[in-house]
Image (cartoon, rainbow, N blue to C red; front, side, top):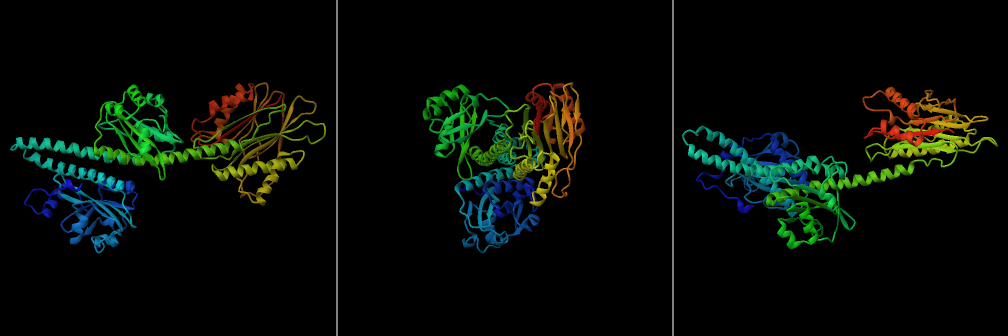
Length: 619
């Protein structure tokens, strides 16, 4: 970059020329949106605590772009200039790289360096269209730092884009002045207009690259999984030279696995979804050699890669390919592939910009892989905590469990069903059923749910003849005494064969839970509304009540959690009414089919809460 900087061939002193050019930028000791954006990009891309854009006026250094500097500098936006500051900091002719300012003769006594709390310092010159140095784009660390070559390359690219922005501002001001003399100097103004257009295109290209970096950073900052990352990549790269296809491949043991677009079908992604790491492809070479690989055209593909790669790109109609390895915090995560159908010249600036953008993409991929792994573990844990329903017995039982859309949330919803020995010799085995919801969606809620389920089972077994109310009362007392922070709702019931059969009897106790529904064989649905207060650690233990009703042979009992009926902005009573209507219409079908229809009709496609539904049919 230093070779590209030259003094304007003019008799004007450099300081005077600089002040004239700076006036054209209209920048001052005040915050500027574009300059602040460049400072943010430097801080993010180089992972430094502070960065700024500085421009040298006659007797001071103005800071129109600031990120991370302590007060008073974000408000003051100016530093006094000493002779050494002017030479080394304000208008560096070449990149100024300092590992430790305290030990560097150029900077250790400089008051500006001390005022900004600089230890490590990297600055790239900012120039106008004639190469006159106007200031610098600076990265600061508050501890000694050996700047990596890649970091300095990224800083240089951003300085080029920032210079382009300054040139664009200068050109805009100059064009307004030129307009005033258009009538008297038409020929000269026309040539100036053509020159300005050419320079503006260059400036726009540089600014476009900087905007791509910022857009990539902002767009991928909140991704929630690999599918989300892949979805956002689709429209990330636009403008002039927009690629025909942008793909994402991640390392999976000894192969590269393509992440398909979750919304669109791409022939590219289905033609070859897995590549062994030793395959002769540009993507696998980028991974093996840990560098960016560019295939400019078919001739280069034929010369450097295997016949399988040639056939693949021919079938896909792709000509130019750029493959960038994606580095995680410790390992290589995968490869970003950018492809054009027509031959595309990937210039140095564009390549540097795409490489820099890949850093943000790699961060998003690493975060997504971590989240996907957590979601997988959460799903496995949730599945392991669900109860196995009795496989034998006279009562047909079926359960529906739907996890919340946020895969990291492990819910406190559960169901339980088990037969117990008869209370008296010769009697049939009673069936105990429970549906509950412990407040919360995290590991703590799941842990408490497991404890409550086990304690309720024990309380039931210990209180023959298995009174639901007595069991719940004992659970309240145990949670208070231990103590266990158990808050939530549940309904606990017992099904017994009535004397002489064939009807059954339901005895239940409800701790603030949504009401069970009972459908009789004639299609009538009864809402079992009786309930006591819910579970809560702040409430004193109290005697629970229980209720009893007859279940004619062929009746269907439905228990559920509030995730089925609660929707933001919807009335719960109306939702229960809808559930009653569904049960009345379809309740004579097998329990599994009943749950399928309920889930398909009432369950939210993107549920904010877990859903549990338990259906029982007495013979």
